Length: 82
Image 1 (cartoon, rainbow, N blue to C red):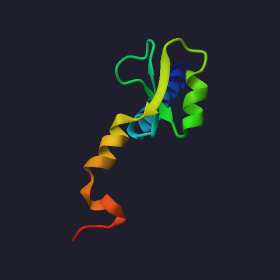
Image 2 (cartoon, helix red, strand yellow; image 1 turned 60 degrees about the vertical axis):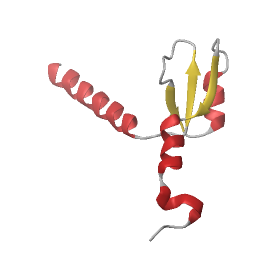
Image 3 (cartoon, helix red, strand yellow; image 1 turned 45 degrees about the vertical axis):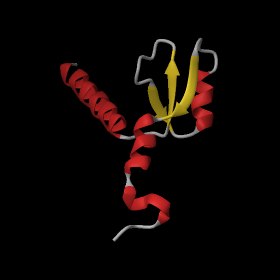
């Protein structure tokens, strides 16, 4: 029994850590989600579906993804700088 519980906790922890490392492009902000919001959506439609029915929430582009795109000069204009 203990081995099963420990294995389950390890699995859940590794799954959460793997999802935390990924920068999904869409986030739900507002309500009780805090400053960072819930950034676990690959499409705007997924984000809007999750935000619907929640009071005072909205969808926007993940700030980490947005600023990463703006700060990456190597891909600016679709061409790599040499």
